Length: 177
Image (tube, rainbow, N blue to C red):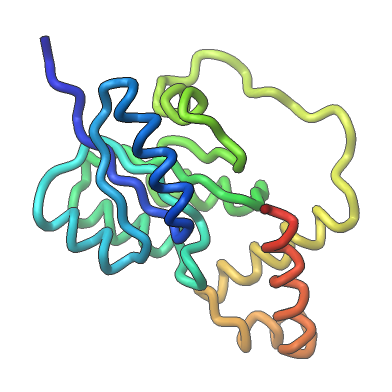
């Protein structure tokens, strides 16, 4: 019997990490957790991992930037990006940078496991158009990613006051909970 590779779980929500780690353990999958990028990179440098579930937003750190750094350390690492506020732009960027999949929270352990399987079916397409708030959120997220998470540069690019952008980002983070 071949041993299942250990997963690396990277999310700034410690409770989510603990629940996910226990759920994976019940399915015979070992996992180690990191709450910040430097911790994840240190774990990667200490041992090989087969798979990684990576949150897109790590308390202000860019999960997309971390994704690139992780793949530099372990090019064969399969990374699934998980986010509380998904957008087409960030999904495309995550896949472009090397992620094997991109899922929105809430996602159960079965969805995460399935997310690493090869795609041989057309993904579910949403029937209703996105709301204005969703479009705004996606646009802000895309511009924020283009500016590597720099809020001041993003506010200038959006022609918006920095505090207004911070309020919108704070509101968006509440939407994902």
